Image 1 (tube, rainbow, N blue to C red):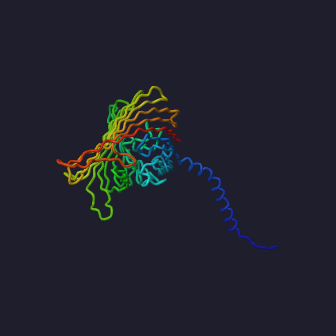
Image 2 (image 1 turned 135 degrees about the vertical axis):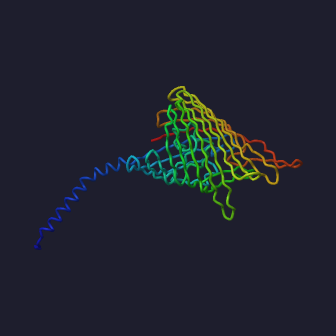
Image 3 (image 1 turned 60 degrees about the horizontal axis):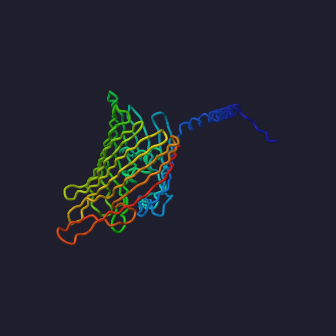
Length: 384
């Protein structure tokens, strides 16, 4: 048998080590439980079937598609009541839309650190862009009356930078919510032409803007204004772009038995004869016969100012979209939607004639005959 001697100090160190390990092991379940309590997980799944009678519209084709969905998974961790981090992953199914070529299969649409201090909220990182009524909830299908809010398109969902927010009590049941932001974001686009849609993405830099909301004493009624100045990053040897300005105004009325809302947006760049402009707006209204059922209608319109050099400018009515829809809300976390649309104009997934070239004086471009399509979407939205 091996013999050895053990000093009193060695025994003391061993006992202290065992006691320390025992304390850690005993505290581990408490720490683990506290860590789990600080962790949050939420998700939203919206999936549907869409079919058109002819031309493709926003990914809905004549053949029909089940590849129409928005899946958002949000992970959060609270350090305390004033500090947290949030990451939200997004997967989009866009059917046959040309925009699929510039949309990742899965990507972090949000990833930010949030700090609350002295009435202010600071968000740093990839933040939801505070813009209009629906932008910050555009992927939560249970909060949307239609599958997608058409005016917002598939872009400007976030901003890489800083967002500072604060709410103010103005007295007399009036309130004011202010957001100021700065940073960069991507602009994804699909421009209709007579041959094939032009699809791409550009980086907007030096963005500085605000979103303001005025809450009224009438419960459910508020007014909003959004403004942003930014520059697009030059591609290759292209010259630096002139500053671009985006403006949006909102009226949002949501009451117990009915709702009515609308928004108008303008994007402009340049000045004088070189000025470009894109405008779109929508009006939406509906009734709530019961807590479960909602009936609504919506009208969308988009226009663009074109410069067919050397011919005179022309404003082209890109698209009108009329929708009627019915929603059935099974619970706060489950919503079914059936919507029917009529779209006419030039913004389709496949090429359609847009302008007719002049053949005689006064040599002015004229719009081509408008194309049209009827399409429908049946969808279910689940939040958890």
